[in-house]
Image (tube, rainbow, N blue to C red):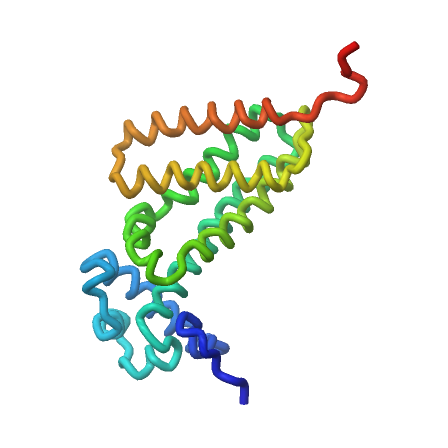
Length: 217
């Protein structure tokens, strides 16, 4: 028998069959719905189980407490966001620097704002479940895709491309998160898109590697 983790934020077990996967998915979605409806402070595992249509005992088979459940839900949300960035980045491979600037900004905006209310609601419990670690892991994953794309740029090259990609992802996500929390309107997001393109484009152009043989005399 596998040893049970002592980490209070770790699930008790992982689903291994289609039926158990469906149960956990229902619990995850119910968690999001309850979080949206009543907020983190009033959210209880009893409410979540009722919304998911499962017994409280079934919920506790997978998650030892509310914090562990919320941590798993946020981790999944961040993974889905990173996967969307990856999907949209793949289409930019081999493009020009200007194309990549526009495409990268759009990919990050689209991924972050796909379920904007969920992104907003998940901000509250982050401090309670070591959210910094989860967010950094997701940012590192997304930065990996962005670095691959920047490496394929047909009219520019960069040194330390992984660092560039991480700074782009974290800067854009921070700006978007602030706008989401502040409940920015459509006009605000349009202006933010313009500023993000200028920020990313200017940064990448400033950090380009000088062409070989272009040394000053």
